[in-house]
Length: 482
Ligand code: CS2
Image (tube, rainbow, N blue to C red):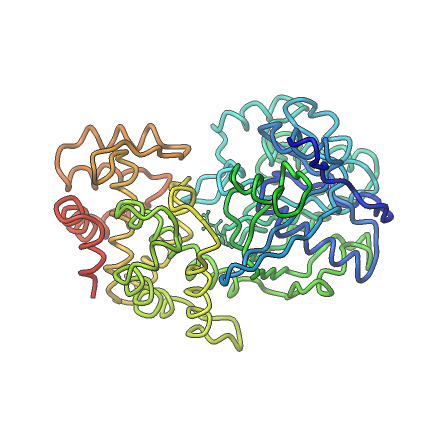
């Protein structure tokens, strides 16, 4: 840190009291949910300060604490313009493994009315193929017998238990993760766990608890060290925890919050631009399939073709044509859009967002955790296309691309650092099989990802795509999809 550099400091503005605990304080929520909540408070007031919780690592807390939990949200336009916003809504950050009791105490605090989550797809400890809680997950096994939990479902259940025992209403559980019917999924996980700890607690949560579904959208690549240095040079102050994001943001929220708090159950999110609706499903399908489904398809095939970022991938005319065809031929026909939404315009806007050269969103980052992402992003669309008798060679190629990727060797024979809860199992399955057909059959046998019905229907087309990928490479395979 240069001697003349000032550390980012909190302003003298009045701090709203805490009203929200957020589990999983990563870059996305700090560029997204925190912005909406701060805007809602600016317009309509309310004690909606955020207590952040990291469930794994102390790094975010260690970066934010010296600057009193204030940080910069850097919005990056496609034409190179940037805006810097100082965000002050986060009031504290706890590290759960260091002090789970402190986390539970905040979640059981009467001032807290909402617990939001961005714990990624794997953080719900559920079985992706069924949506039910994985009772063999090591953190769930621990949390069943320990009042001081490790998992997100564990913290939700134990905190709700304390609130029930103290005669307090529950908090609203507001998930902000990219999962279909995310509210119902986290409710199911909480009830599955609570039911095994105390059935009367599960009944209370089922009756009094609220788990609204939401659709969240803002492209927020991981912050890199060079981002921190460049920001310091541009602004003259040092921020060790900035977040980088695109200008676009969209939050669609099921308006179903704990009734005991009445009109004070939530911040005025609509005043901040969120859409409060009765049913998020059409918005979820649109976003998970049109954005996340093509994100993952481009991530695996783009990475194999040697493209480092999404912007570089869609700058390649072969991939540009591929993704535009994916939207129109294989994804848009598979679901009913939200009322009044023009899917052609939505797809065009997505392409412009992907093309933003300022957003250095790595294919490797999006490729993470594919075993937890594929079902809702790609396999659901394939299933619906198969039911409708609609060919979907592009999505089959995307699945083959994922299979090549988890094999751990790229097209130049270099190792791929595969980040996935099932990485070791997937690589072992791939290595143990000698032919394309056998590799595909082995990976299709992972029931956490592929149902037996889908595995049977994917075997032939995915094997063919995998074979072509192995011989001709990703760029030619993508170019041949018509
Ligand atoms: C991305 C998402 O990393 C990924 O899996 O597909 O984080 C994506 O950037 C967001 O859902 C965009 O809203």
